Image (tube, rainbow, N blue to C red; front, side, top):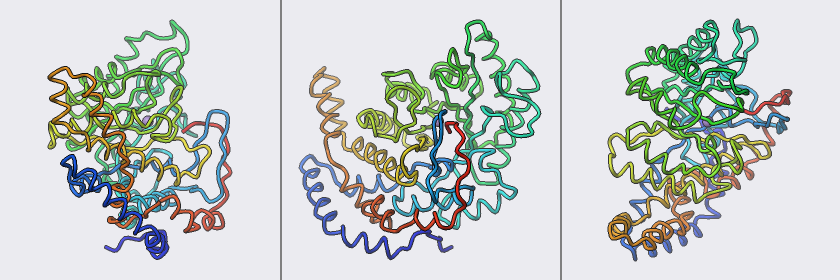
Length: 432
Ligand SMILES: [Mn+2]
């Protein structure tokens, strides 16, 4: 099947021709530098070329805060347009072939046709996300006081049925995982029993788990506050792990980088979850104060590197079992979402590439001999390497653009879409 690429391939070829001599020269220089420490750059490039991180369909449109939203002309306004923009991002960066859907935001009367459309664009569907943190028009029960953990049985049953619907749609889309995040929690001490709420959550989740196909995973996302500000039912990785253990082997923990208290050691959490076979996946973003949903690597690229350092170790330890689901989960409030996704994808893949360059033999020896400084410096040496020529070369070899954001701007995509797509009318507040 010929893949429909939304951007004119000639524009990308012209763009790449301008940059190819510089990329080749920088790649050769990096190859020589790495060869001096015994690293074959082509082997690293092959690993980078096999990396993939999914885009959430809703991430192609502007997000917002609870105070407001500022849509841009030409942004996608329906699921077809969101898929097209996912294909634009993938065409340019070649590390984002998966699309994560969200229901009801991506509702379709014909999931099979939607799957065909995605495949024609060279995309596949990654995890399905359910939504029981908002009330939808016409729904019988409210989630105001909780969903899977609600005291009201009818609200719990509605939330269970919605998650099972998501699995049914996901089967038709070719997805293999359901991601469940609930906003359930409390705003007042005494509002609910922590324990009873968790027990109700587990009962409800067991009913959803029972509906999972045998080759699916249920990814449980924790978050320590917001929208509930006193307590949340799945507050942190400890409670998440308790839930995943109670449900069974197909239940895994999902780590959203912004869903922890400030300064929590997320890379250690990653290591511990992998240790017990419960590391299900990631939502990549960055944060300064809370669940800010800023672009991955924008605030703390070093933390992103340290997380990938644990992931590379985990993969080396058990390459066959290692398959966490990666997704970008950001709220693009000020930028063109496609540009932010390209920039974040680059930050993520660069963090991965740097982690691949860690001299693990030396690191192990320094750890065993308690050479603290050299252990630290071994990690830092990899972090300090500018891997951008390696990542650019992998991207161009795969058909992508030398400089994805520049190429997108040169293509005039957003301007053309501004003339074609209906203007965005929904400026309502609401973080997504
Ligand atoms: Mn998330």
